[in-house]
Structures are given as structure tokens and as C-alpha cells.
Length: 352
Image 1 (cartoon, rainbow, N blue to C red):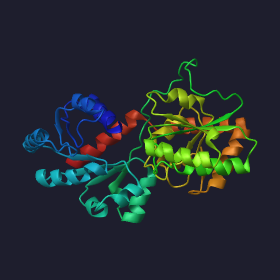
Image 2: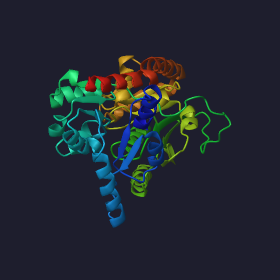
Image 3: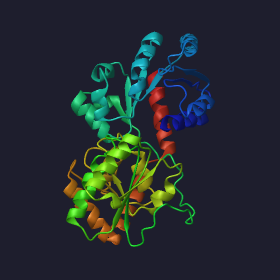
Image 4: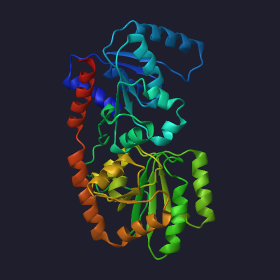
């Protein structure tokens, strides 16, 4: 979604630039939108094994190699290896837009080797830049930080929008994102258990919006049923428009083990919700910390997390003040036009 928005913005501001798109995984939900945004559109469907699609892939790749380019942009680690091959083919600079963080680096085979082929690395947070510099010996001047920006319109929705939970007098703690290990789905039952043990009189409900597999749902339900905390969690599933849910939250909680940025954090903060997360794990949390505009606790410190949430739950004035501070700070830091100008400058520097 971020890359699509950048492509559209560049087309708007640099109409004389030709932007061809090679989509690595054809058939996804956004393929048609990328097709409309491109001057030339190519698909390399890695998932397909059919003869027909293999032929289409081969012909499409031959058409791609007949083009001429000034710069290659590889978006995410998935596109890095093909980006390197195209760099070698066309003998032009490679800009790597890195949208992952350290765990993804570890599971990418040959990540450190492939970084050496990049002429410029664009990442979405100072957190990821620090990791690249300190752990992968990348020169600071090689890395440009261009922050993400919210993907949704954040205006307050109709207050009559019905939500599937009624919790008068209850503190709503919201989470958002795919329900998986990286997002901390296994941590939530442990946190609710710790919270209830420490603060049994608090009335809280953890609401998670996001897609989940059958296995992930069953694992969470097993833990919460066995620990007798199932009444503390509501799994909303995949929501087309999560903003009404965000507005119902009193606190926004991010349990992710890693997020290069974390758009959901920015979206919640920019509508005035106080944010709580782990230290050194989420780019947007680190950005909020720069403005002293969130609460973060040491990684996997569930007692500390429970304490931080309890303090905000029982002090509405603290919630309001922290939420407003986060909103003002992030609004000053995230800007769609500024990000587009930064991308434009990176690309122009590569070809001059």
C-alpha cells in the first residue's frame, strides 16, 4: 500500500517519469491497482506452476528485458534478489526500499551479502537504520529514513457505527494487525493472565482487529480458556474499515516483536489514542518516544506492560494527555508530500 501510494504521488508530481512495475506475486488483491498505476506492467508469478502461466511469465520477462531504465527500485526483501539481477542486466543503480526489520533479516538467506549490491537503502524508521549501521556495518550515509504515513482516512466516523461489544465502564485496550507470532499473538494470553493476577478489580477488554488463521485462533482460545481469561479478549477478525474500532479504544497496545514502522500505531496515535509497546521493536513507537509521546517497556516484560496499562486505565486524564501529545508529535513528523519529495530526491541523486 505504501509503495502504491508513492508510485501514484511520483506520477502526479513527475509526469515525465516512466514507472514500470514488476509484480513478484501475481493475483493478489492489489494487482489491478498496480496495473493502473504503471506505464508498463509485468508479472512474475512465483507461486504458479501451470504451463500457461509459466509461458506468460517467460514472455513477460523477455518484454521486460527489452526495456531501458535509469534506476531499479526493489520494494521489500522479497524483491531484493530480482532487483540485483536487473541491476546487473541493465548496469544501473539499485535502490532498496527496506520495509522489514531484524527478524526478517535473519530469515532472509544471504541478506548481508545482498546488501552490498545496493547503491542506496531507504528504510521507514530510525530503528531499522540503527540496526543496519550497528549490526550490518552499513555506512550511515547509505541509508535514507523516509517515514511511512497512515493508509486510512482518519476522520472521526459516524458515532452511530455499531460495534460488536458493549462495555460501559470498561477500559478498551485495542490491538491491530495479522494475528501471528511476529505480532505477539502468543503474548496476549500471557499478558491478560498477568494483568488479572495483579489487578483483579480492573474492568478491561482487549480488542484485536486483524486477520487470523484457524490455528492461531484455536491456540489463543486454548490459552485463554485454560487460564480463565477468555472474557478479557475479543477477536474482531479482519475489518474492512478499522477506524471506528480505533475510535472506541481507550489505549492502543502494540505487542509486536518487530515492526519496521507499524502503520497501525501511527493511525491510532494520529486520532489521539495513547500508545503502549515494547522498547526497540516498533519503528513508530521509537518515533513517538523521540517526542516523549508514548509508553514503552522492556521487551517481553509483561509485569511492566500490565503496570503501564493499569496506570492509564485508572487515570483517564493521563490517557487524554498522552494521546494528544502523540497526535501532535506524529502529525508534525509524518507528511505525505514530504515523503514523496524525499523519494524523488533519492531517485534523482541516483541518475545524476
